Amino acid sequence: MKKTMRRAILAAAVMMQMFVALFAGGSALADEAEQKQADILAAPSVTGALHVEGAHLVGSDGKPVQLRGASTHGLAWFPQYVNEEWFRQLHNEWKANVVRLAMYTAESGGYCTDGDKEALKVLVKQGVQFATACDMYVIVDWHILSDLNPNVYIDEAKDFFATMSNEFKGNDNVLYEICNEPNGGTDWQAIKTYAEQVIPVIRQNDEDAVIIVGTPNWSQYVDEAAADPITDYDNIMYTLHYYAATHKEDLRSRMASAADAGLPIFVTEYGICDASGNGALDIDQANQWIDALDQYGISYVAWNMANKDESSSIFKSSCGKTSGFTIDDLSDSGKWLHDMLIAHAPDGAEKADSAGQQENIDAQQAEAGADSGEGDASVNGEQNADSGESAQSGGDAGDAIVSGVDGSGVLTITDGDIEASAVLRGNWEENGVPTYQYDLTLKNKGEADCSSWEIDVPFDGEVKLSNGWNGNYSAEGNTLHITSVSYNGTIPAGSSIRDVGFIVSGAQIAAGSADAES
Ligand code: IDC
Image (cartoon, rainbow, N blue to C red; front, side, top):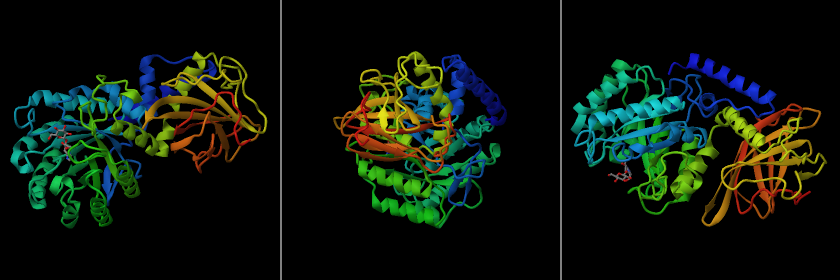
C-alpha cells in the first residue's frame, strides 16, 4: 500500500467530516464514499511494512505489533465470505487487523488436485484487495493438510508464490504462509528444505515480506524449529496451531519455551473447540491461551469464517448472510471471538477508532433530535442532564431510549462534572443470560480540566461485567463503577473522550433511575 499519500488524503477527508459534524451540530454525515474512507482510517490500522526483530513482529514505526483476526474456511468451499463489506465489519466493529486466506492444496477442490486454479487465484487476489481496502494485513495461506508433506506439491507452491508475490510486491500488508500444517511424520528437516526453496522465490519479488513457515505435527513442534531455525533469510516466522479443547498446558509450555528461546511464532490458526474443528468449546482453555499469547505478544488468527455446521465456524449454520452480521448470527465460537477481539484491541486501535464512532454517535443523536445547542447528549431534545454532585442517570424514566439491538439510541448519564453518552452497540444471550455491549463518550462539563475521572453507571438489575476496555471496571449490585486509566484520565474542560466501552450481562443501563450507591 502506498500509504503516506493515501493517509494524507484520508486524514484531510476525515478532518473535513469532523469539522462539518462539529459545526452542523453533528447532523451532517458525509456521503457513503467519505464514510468508507473515514472508516478505513478509523479502525486498528496497519502500521506499514512489518518485519521480525528477535522473537517479535514489529511495525514500520519500530513498535511491536500483534495481529488479531480470523481465517477463511477453505476458499473453494466458502468463497462467499471473501467480501469487502464483511472484512470492513471485521475490522471496524470487531477490531481485527488481519485476515487469513486459506487455500487448501490437496482436498477436494484443492489447488493441486481438482480445484479451479484460476478461480482460486482470483479469490486470493480479491481477498488481498478487500483486506487492503479495509486497512488490514492479509495472510496468503498455502493450506497443506492431507498432502502431509509440503514437498509433495513443491513445484506448484513455487509457481503459486512466484505469481502471488509478483502480484502483491507493491503491498506492504501481505504475509505469506507457505505450508499450513505439515503432518504424517514429516520432520523439520523436510519442512526446512522445502522452505529454503520457496522463500527465495518470494524474495525475488519481495525482499522483506514476512514469511511464515509451518512446523512438524500439524504445526505444533515449534521447539524443533527453535533448535534449528532458518538463518539465510530475514523476516521469517514459525507457525503454531492449537485447538483449545484438545491442546492445553503441554502445548502452551512448548510454545513458551520456543518463544523464550527467541523463536518468532505466529498462531495463524486456532480454534476453541477440539482439533477436529468441532465438538464442545473449552472457554477456560481458550482464555488461558489468549493470555499466554498476549503475554508473549504473539499474533493469532481464529478458524474459521463460515456457517458450516461445526463448532469452529463463527457464523450459525442457519445464517445465510455474508455481511452485516449481528450478534444473533454468530455461533458460540463467533460470539466468543467477537467479544475477545473487541476486549483485546490495542489502546491505540481503540483510540484511533474515535472518528468513526463519533460519527455514529452524532448520527444517532441527530436522529433522536438530540442537539441541545451546547453539545449535551440529551434525548428527544430534552435537557435531561442533572449536574448535581451525586451520580444520577439523565432524564425521567422513559425519556432515554436504549435501542433493542443495534444502538439507535443514546442514553445520557451524569455523574458530577462527567457526562456520559452511552450507546447500546448490541445485545444477545449468553447461556440464556441477556448480554449487552455499550460504548461511552465522556464529556467533562466542568470548568476545570480533569486529570482523572470516575463514573457510576446505574443498571436496572444486578449487573455482571464480562469485558471492559479503556477504563477500570468493577460491578457492584446494580452499579458499574468505571475509573480512568493512565492514558485517558485527562479531559480538558468542555472536551470529550471516546472509546470507553464494556460488555455486561444480567441488566441494562437504567433509563431514568438514580445510581444505587449515591
Ligand atoms: C477442517 C475444517 C473442516 C474440513 C476439514 C478438511 O474445519 O470443515 O472438512 O478441515 O479436512 C486444522 C486444519 C484445518 C482444519 C481444522 C479443524 O488446518 O484445515 O479444518 N484443523 O480440523 N488443523 C487442526 C485443526
